[in-house]
Amino acid sequence: MMRPLLFCLLLFTVCCADPQDLTDKVFTFPLESNTAHVKLIGVREQNFKTMTVCLRFFSDLSRAQSVFSFATPSCYNGFGLYTPSTGQYGVDTGNNAVFFWGLPGKLSDWNSLCGTWDTGTGLAQLWVNGQPSSRKAPVSWVSPVGTPSITLGQEQDSYGGGFDAQQSFVGHLTDVHMWDHVLSPCEIQLYMSQLSFTPGNVLNWQALEFTTHGRVAVEKKQTVSCYL
Image 1: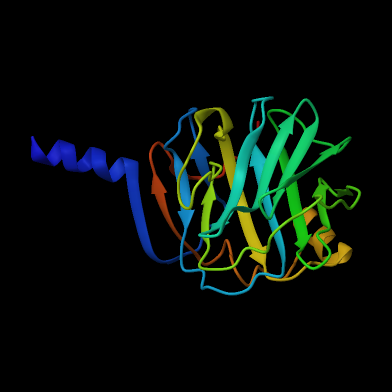
Image 2 (image 1 turned 180 degrees about the horizontal axis):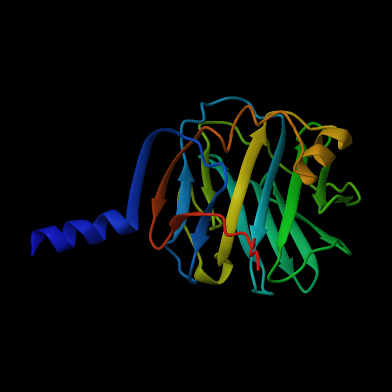
């Protein structure tokens, strides 16, 4: 009885102590839950005054979903990215949020998403499938200071936890990168076009340290290439 139980535990929690090259791989979140998430580890404590996060997502849900959540002990919603709910995108910025409308995005298709934030000015911006948003700032914000807790697929309402199934992501995530500065429009377009770009200096999809928790699978990205 112990061997089947051990096998099941390995399915639900996968620890990757060494950096993994996830080129052509995806994280698959197959169902709504308040447990399934990926924890990104190995990020050192630093003062994140500016940041950029880019990723690609695929989902058929139209409700709001958290794809990226950055928290510190003093700032649970330090920086976060939400996929659309009736055409709306959201960005957590220092325990407050700003929202964007009118950006592209398709259900049941791959979408490229980048978010930037400057804690000095408070200005945040999104890029979706090559199209930039306006630049917005919350009324007030705090700078996220301390050792970060970074999760994919859930929003952190407490440091490393506080997950809500109604905010969970269901679908596929890939190509996650994070930089400790605001990328230029040209650099973002290179990422959007899947051309040669400088990988993230905080999180790098080609050298990612992570653990998976709950029902999350690491899979090869599916492509359609049939020849008749």
